Image (cartoon, rainbow, N blue to C red; front, side, top):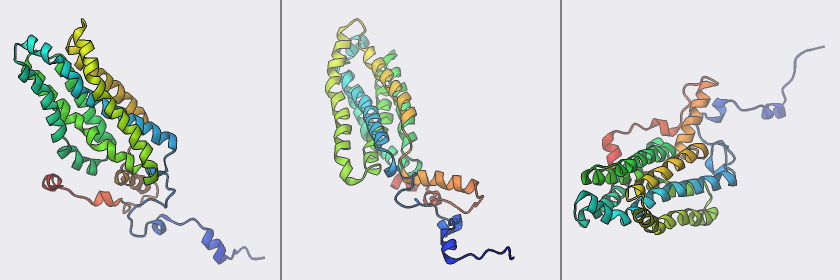
Length: 267
C-alpha cells in the first residue's frame, strides 16, 4: 500500500498562502478590509474613548489661552508693567498656536500621530508650570509662547484622526462630540480664571491648574490612546513580519522615505 498522498487542486487551494505569496513585491499592506492593524476596524468603544480623550487633550490647552485673561491685571501689578505688556502673554500663546502647525503638520506625516501629540503636550504642560513660577514678566512671556508652540500639536493633529478611524458616514457624530469638548473650555476659561484670581490662590494658580489637568490628561492618554496613522502601523507590521519568518526584504512603503530637512520644510 502506497504512503504517497496525492494533493488535489482543492487541497492546494486550501493551503495557507506564504508571506511571499501575500506580499510578492515585499511591500507590506493591510490584508483586506478586515485587517486588525487597520484603525478603521477598531471597536466602537475604542473609537469613542479615543475621540473623547483627544477632545479633552485639546480642550485643556485651549483652556490655557483663555484662563489667563483674568490674570492680566494681577500680573501687571505684581511685575509693575502695563496691561498691554501682560496681555502680550495671551497674544504670544496664540502666536505659538499659529506657528506650531508649520512644525507638527509635516512631522506627524513622518513619525505618526500619538507621540507627536503627547510629547509636545508634556512640554507644553511643563511650560505652564514655568509660567506659574515665573519671577519676572520676561519669563511669563517666553513660557507662554512655548506653551502655545508645543500645545498646538494636539490642536493641529487630533482633528484629522477623527477621519482616519471612521468611515465618512460615521464622522458627523464624532466631530460634534470632539467639537463640544474644544469649544467649552475657552468659554469657561475666563470664569475659572476670574474665580482663581479673586481668591487667595492668586493668578499663578491659573497656570498651576492648567499644568495639573494637562498632566492628568497625559496620563490618561498614555493608557487609552493607540497609534492611528496607517503608514506607521504598517511599518510596525512589517517589522513584526520581518522577525518571525526572517524575511528581511519585507517593508512598508513608508519606510522607503528618506526626507531631508529641506524637503520637510517644503512639505
